[in-house]
Amino acid sequence: MPDRLVVLYRGNRPPATALIERLTDTVYATEEELPYLLPGADALLAWVTITPAIREAWPDNPEKAPRWVHASSAGVDSFLFPALVDDPGVVLTNARGVYDQPTAEYVLGLILALAKDFPGTWEHQRRREWRPRPSDGITGRTALVWGTGPIGRATARLLRAVGMRVCGAGRKARTDDPDFGTVHGRTTLPAALGEADYVVLAAPLTKDTRGMVDAPVLAAMKPGARLINVGRGGLVDEEALIDHLAAGRLAGAALDVFGREPLPVESPLWTMPGVMISPHTAGETTSEREALVEVFLDNLTRHIEGRPLRNVVDKRRGYVVDEPYSG
Image 1 (tube, rainbow, N blue to C red):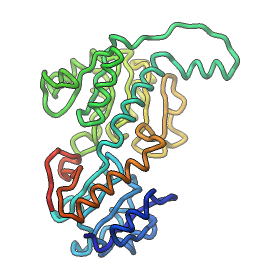
Image 2 (tube, rainbow, N blue to C red; image 1 turned 180 degrees about the horizontal axis):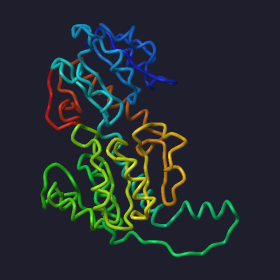
Image 3 (cartoon, rainbow, N blue to C red; image 1 turned 90 degrees about the horizontal axis):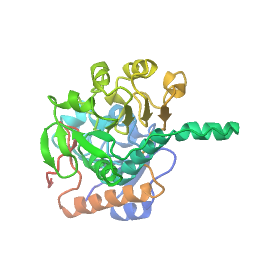
């Protein structure tokens, strides 16, 4: 049983705190308080995940560092600093599974909004302008989902269900994937980019994926295609994307994540035609907080009872690899 659990929060504490406190000695810390409360704790629940506070508060003495860190997010790039990654005694888990279907639904909504030009319709409504015009269809269009984890798979299944042709891009090429059919690797990816009407980014941010959508990749995309990013902002070279959008090579983009968040007000992306901006909310729902706590409580119970934890992250790869952990 954890001797002491630190819960990092900002603004509102997690729901069901009484259940958590019933299971273990619990203290709550803001980002400013974390350096004083984290040393000596056995476990950390990071209710705030996109923050440098955990890295900055991490104890210099490994014996004072928590043995278990749970991220209430799917992405864990903020946690992959050397002191945590290099310590074999620290287990990192995440909220894998909570965001799969909500993010897939969000991607479908973005594709429909781009194809049907809903932003244009709303702008005409705001101006009280009656402007009938045709729009694109999505049935039979090709979506390349780059990232074959649970979010990418949920997205592929949903896009197939509405009649889109779907393929994937990942570390290992294959032709018999149950959700993607064909998964493209490094050698066949350029050709796949040239055929895709929509490129959906759903990959984790790791040392291998950072900046993967650079100028050559954008140049390989089909003229008039659209880019959707619900993964991490660091996957994309934003300056190169701005250049390709400004040149008209791409028809548009729907971006939920950015290299710097909040997106600076001076960024050209805010006002570029065909670009939709959302504030890192693709996976958020009204029931998200309860689902996140449910995953953590399950792991806390497992930890207390000595059973294998769920969603253990391979700290070298930066994502869960479906291998059980017991400890």
